[in-house]
Length: 140
Image 1 (cartoon, rainbow, N blue to C red):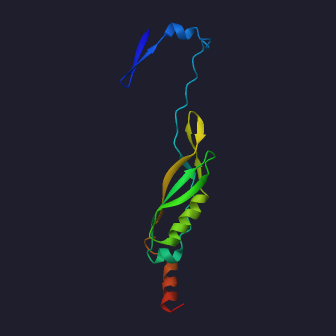
Image 2 (cartoon, rainbow, N blue to C red):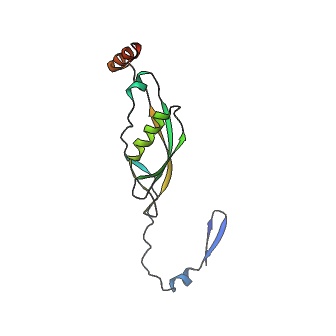
């Protein structure tokens, strides 16, 4: 009998006994290594120019269940950007994203991940911002 030590446990293998169990003499097929979720297509969310021009930004962190087909299933807000409109736009954008599903033993599996979606006000301000600011100064 051959003895193999695995993480502190001693496991006895009866090599001669296994050969006569009717199993194939062919070597076992290698088990596929697990893979993690990978983003494939992540178009950015719509960033309202009025908010960008006002310097309003932030990061919405979303909890996303990626299905076996790579599409987002359940999406919930894990932490807010501090602006409800930006959070809503982040949720809308991620529903259109596409992922490569994680795998275990070569088979796709649903996986929950956290996805940050950032809204960074542009620097310098786009020319469009000056027209918006002027319109707001005039009350309209």
